[in-house]
Length: 581
Image 1 (cartoon, rainbow, N blue to C red):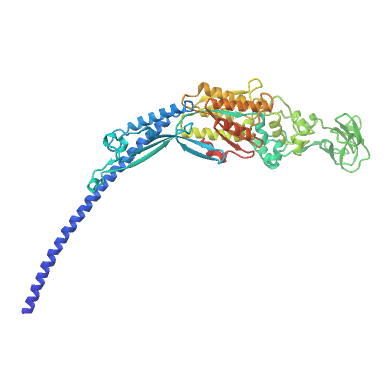
Image 2 (image 1 turned 45 degrees about the vertical axis):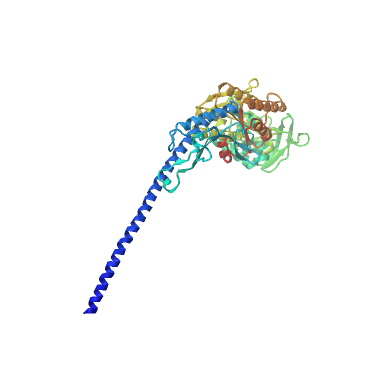
């Protein structure tokens, strides 16, 4: 009994002891947790406040940078531009509040001007900050709230105080430092496109370029041009690939045979359904030569002796009993003059598609003893390939072949594609840019034409550009006249604060107003006049034969940029760089 009672007493004491200790531990733990919760709460409030303050400061910095950028000017002196930019930025910042300040403070030193320029050596853009780097095209705003304990409170500006905190002072941290920055560039551009529509702007599509671009590439382009025109069909015998003309004789009837004669200029291939007996050839100098004692049904005939190498104009082929077909008794007569060839090509009943020339002119073009067609191996051959080349080389103007603007003639197609990229970019950024358009050469007396003055109607400019073709007005290249007209338009009508810019696209081979050397000197003189009037030139040379050295000089004189688009290539690889300009 006594032992059981003793055990119960001990157990009761243990329960009382352990129960009292458990209650004391909870109180201590609760107090500690309360301190931690209050600490986190105060910390969260201060963090939230700082986040709000930073957003407010960033908004003020963004507004200040944009306001400063709106004062950028390519025509005012750098000192005036810098003063205007800083004044506008400081005023814009002051219109915003941040943390405990109802008006954000900026000093002149917080507004930094800079310039982003193209390095032609490294082929990259370089950004430089500081008043020494002109012309300015960038504005950076550095906005700080930093506790400056080295200054007496009375000497401090709004930037020399940290952001005051609510609860952090309990832990000995009265303020926090914040820094934000913003960079902006905005300067409406007044741009005049100076575009080369001389005759050489289709050279890369002509057979003359097979030695630089390859025959396959040139002929593929000619086929594309043919397709661009709707793959027209003239008569029933022309194919795209050039072929010799074949004269078809009368149908076979009894002992009168059917004869086909393939004309090859200085020779003819004869095929008859009966045995050949004799032939007479007449040449371009009116001499004739008789070939007697022929046999077989096929024969190749050409002049010999003094007639060797002479062009055949007529052939009389005697076979079977066809001597009755000609009064002279020489057999069936075949006409290989231009008029006769028109018939053999199936063009005698087809009107030439444009005014001012004829099928005979095209036939004569294919028959020349020198030139592109001969060098490409197509002399005396006729097809849509040589017809396309005829139009590009000889009849390139809008008055002669007005549909060529629809085609992929090169390098003018690359030029047009580049302008399209440029105009599309301006439309996308919606930066209030204006664009004008000058075409050259216009006439001997007036070297260029202002197709459109400065306008925000970029679609109008795009349409005008698209509907121009190589040699549109004149085959010559008066680059200087185009630059002069663009310069005059910018001086007269550019907006006061707009960035003045000329986009010069050309194959870079000036030959007017007089000789090449005079024309080149005029281009360089105009580049200097543009620089004197704060006009930057983006020079784009296009085509296999472009004078890239001249275009680089133009860009260097005006502080601009030069891009080269080689023959057979597009501007696609240069899209990003062109958009950066």
